[in-house]
Image (cartoon, each protein chain N blue to C red):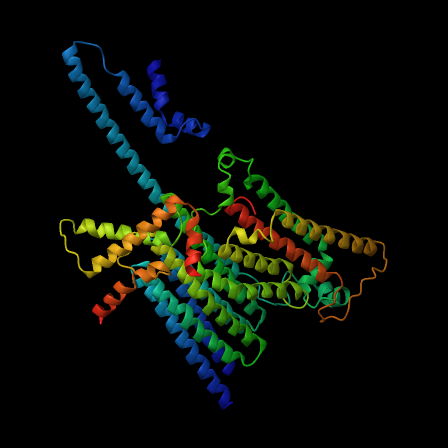
Amino acid sequence: MLGQAYKMLLVGAMIVLGILIVINIIRSVLGPGISDRIIAVNMIGTVIIMLIAILSLYLDESYLVDVCLIYAMISFLSVVVLCKVYTGVYLQRKNMQADLGAVEDNLRRQEERAAEDTAGETGSGAGTEAGESMAAGAERQTADEKTAPGSGAARRQKEVR
Amino acid sequence: MSRIRKDYETSFFRKFKRWMDGETDLLDGVMDLSGQEGTEEPVPGAEGTLWKEDEAGAEEVLREKRAETEKERKSLALFERIYRIMAVILCLAIIWVFLWTTVHLPPFGGADNPANNEVPARYIESGVRETGAINFVTGMILDYRAFDTFGESCVLFVASCCVMFLLRMDKGSSRLLREHPDLLEDDRLFEPKDDVILQRAAAFLLPLILIFGIYIVLNGHLSPGGGFSGGAVLGSGLILYLEAFGFRRTRRFFTEKTYRRITLSALTFYCLAKSYSFYTGANHLESGIPLGTPGAILSSGLILPLNICVGLVVMCTMYAFYTLFRRGGM
Amino acid sequence: MVWEWIRFIAVAVLLLVGMFFEVLAVFGVQKFKKALNRMHAAAMGDTLGVLFIFLGLMVMRGFTMDSLKLFLVICFFWAASPVSGHMISRLEAMTNPNLGEIGVIRTGKDAENEEDSGKENEDEGI
């Protein structure tokens, strides 16, 4: 009786997790951006780890928990490597130096876009002032990098220390 | 005659043949032909009218071209859609085949499964006594079938050698690198470097991963695991270290020279140890290697050192693959 | 026997809560439109869903080596999942030009320079 109840519980959980995997696969196919896909794949990894853990109790095989640990490691590593590779590819296409400066460059682009949108209006509130100072900081950083390529990382390390 | 040849030139079969021969693209041929006709078409005549007619003809040709490219684009879009639908259907078919096979597999652990013949019986009956390994699988792949495993390790080594032939980049390999040797030094030029969060996390996680990998390798004859899986975990730990800290740090302890030394010494030790045990076994001699008590860490004769060898080879191969595909050197 | 049934109910409740969080995370990933919002939903499944499901399995298993390994999986997840989230958000912040407004925490000189403006902004917000 008790064993049957446990079995039904575990099988029900596994079925629900399987359905979640299918939904996530659809999202990873449809996802408009690369990061949406990576998020979906990461979630698939999480759900599969839970599935393996439940399966190890269902089959009463303790070695499947080891598989769980290894799967968690590999999925974490895959996310890290994929993110790095795609960031590198994107920046290589844009021909930009990789650093925190890239994020700020993105911010500056947004500021420019906002400025284009509100062209003609010369309003300067507190928010836009902050934005301008951000843009100035980004410009400084990019100028630094132009003069000495490869010094961006070293400079940031100095800042961190 | 010429008309027939012209028809032949524009016929589908001719285009298909040219495409098969690799002379032109299927779609480029159409565009080129129409362009040539357009340039040859104008006929000499009176100057004033010629100009007008020419322009009109050129416009017409242009319009024709545009219509043709429009048609081509439409057919390409259709092809793309069909291609996607076929890809989805193929994926679903593969999933269906796998699920169908899984459903029709014999029950797990059934007594009258087709895999139950005299070979597993022998393994189960006298496996522990003969190899000293509690884990049958490790005893099988590193004792009864050690020659097979040696071939697998050598295949890994040969594969990484081939990748090295094809993808390795050094100062002599290309003109760009010869002109700018600093490109080789400053690798990963376009990637985010020195991510502090990732570095802290790696400093916390890496010892766990490496210890887990070493545990899997050393406990291969007692619990599930062994050289291949443990080596894969160790290699992934090295890759994580590389991702967090960059090539400049990994090059301190892992270069091509270390790769060569580790792999060659591991394979040589494997070969010598197994040659010795094959030789004594074939001649019905005592090998003189104590089997120990099954269940202890230092037991089961040669299986533990062979596991370590296989783990080292797999670790080096994984790391070498990653670095070679990533940057072209270690 | 009664204790066994109580244990079963505890396991069932923990598993159901974990499944609830997981379903919620997947629903959020489907529902939100931007990648950063999706990450926010997915992180819930990575932390709470994993915690409750593995806690349920640990209760089911009792005090054994397996429970320790399951606990290790939870620890690994809680250490690794924020880092992968950080990597994904960084990728998104670098590559997507239509993000809307995002704030950046800076270190060193830039932060010192902009402390004043930040304070002003905070005051305005309050």
